Length: 275
Image 1 (cartoon, rainbow, N blue to C red):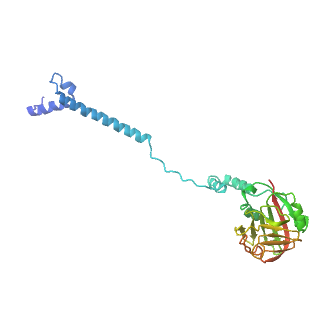
Image 2: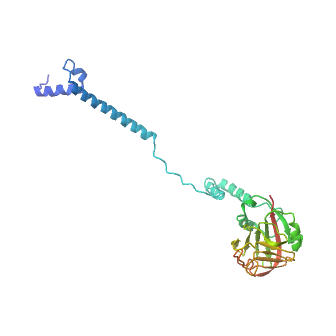
Image 3: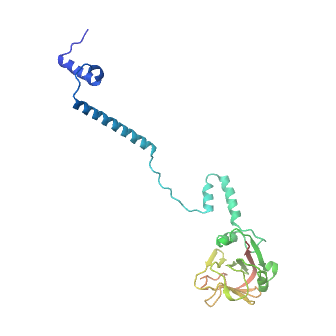
C-alpha cells in the first residue's frame, strides 16, 4: 500500500536526496552556475586543507612530547654515592663499605703504638691530596729507636716527603702535627701552609695555618719547635724527647694541644708518606 505525499513534501524529499546523492539525482539536470561551483570547490578545498592541518597537528603532538624538566646535578663524594647504591642491595653495601674503608686507610709499614683506627680515620681525611694513596713509613719511634732528637734528625736525613709527628704524653693524650717537610736542623723556619696541628683531647681538633705568620717548623740540636710568634710555641720538644710544651700561638690560633701546657712525653712516632 503506497503512502501519499503532498507536493511540498515531495519537493523537500527530492531536495534531500539531491543534496546527499548528487551524482545520482543530478543526472540530466541543469548544471550549476560557475560561481556556485567555485564556491563549492573553495569550501571543499578549505575543508581538505583544514583536515590536513588537523592531521599534521595531531601527528606533531604525538611525536613531540613535552620537554622534560632539566635534571638537577649534584656533586657527591664516593662515599655518598656508595651509600645511595646501598639502598638497592644490602649485600652490595657491605662490600662497598669494606672497600671504602680499605681504600681510605693508609698502608702502614709497622703497627703504630699510638694511632688506632679512629685516629687514622680522622687524620687521613685532612691530609693533602698529594699524600693520598701512598704507604706510610715509620721513620722514627721512641719505642724502637729510643728517646733522642738527634736520632730523629738522623733517620730523616735522606727523606723528602711530608711527615706526621704523633705524641702521647703521660696523661694518655694523643696529639701532634702534620708537616709539609721532613724535620731537620735549620737556622730558619721552613714548611708551607699545608702544616697543621691536631689533638685528641678527647675529641678530634684540627688547627690549620692562620696565615698570620710563617713560623711553621724550626729545629736545632737542643729542641724542635712548631709554630710561634706569640711568646710561645704551638709545640716544643727538648733534645731528649722527654719534656714538651704546647701554647697558643698566632701561626695556627690553636689551643694548647695537651691538657697541660707543660707535659712529659711517653712516646713519639714520626711517619713519612712515601711516593
